Length: 330
Image 1: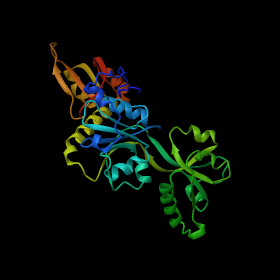
Image 2 (image 1 turned 135 degrees about the horizontal axis):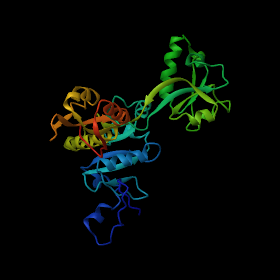
Image 3 (image 1 turned 120 degrees about the horizontal axis):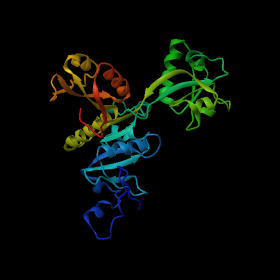
Image 4 (image 1 turned 30 degrees about the vertical axis):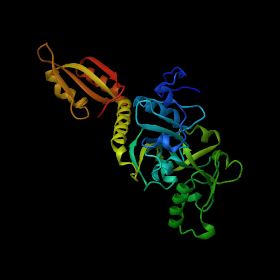
């Protein structure tokens, strides 16, 4: 039995002493053991899995997972983690079998669960595009050019909806309509194998598509990981815990997006400094012992922090410091 804590700090194996902690680690696969707990679905593998573990660590959701089981309980919350394929999570959450889940926005739409789940948070990772791709050598230059031809995809629903709209706009009927064919993987090989004139697939960096001699001609959807809850409230007593977990995860996401910038500046430059670092609501301004000087603390977006520091120095700010955030509530 491997022991893993989501914070990636290893626990020692449980002792055979019969302690409460050891009892918590007993594999749980029956409904009675999970009764009354919040059920939280996490992708069991794939592009979202590792990032989800890091997110849960930041939210201080501790657990140990038996290496042969996809269910484990939290050591410090009244919840159980359910490890599922990302494609199954919208259905489990939408039908109320699971209370919370993390999956891709595209997966929700592909499974037609958007009316049964509530997207609580966009999580800022797993970002990619669902694109229409064709061979570089193809005369097809737009999605309209591809309409009526063969398209291979793992996203039958989204691709079908996208090309149905184009077919209707072009008045394509019956056998003239775009032929959508499903494959479970290696979609990028379909054109080279003569199975398709174009494909619809998720693209992150685009390296795989370029290696296959493909290029994008249209984007169907921009997607990323999302935190979802069930629109069917089967367990009202868990509402406060759902809100707590949601707020904690929101804090982790915000902490990854922002840094705290602190600096000193003379009062006559204060207005210019506040324009550079307005903060989320307003900067914190404190007087210094030195006359006519103040200290300012403000949250700034991490991706803009270097430019902000340059601009502050240019107007006369001194002792400019930037601090990363481990967590926050904003």
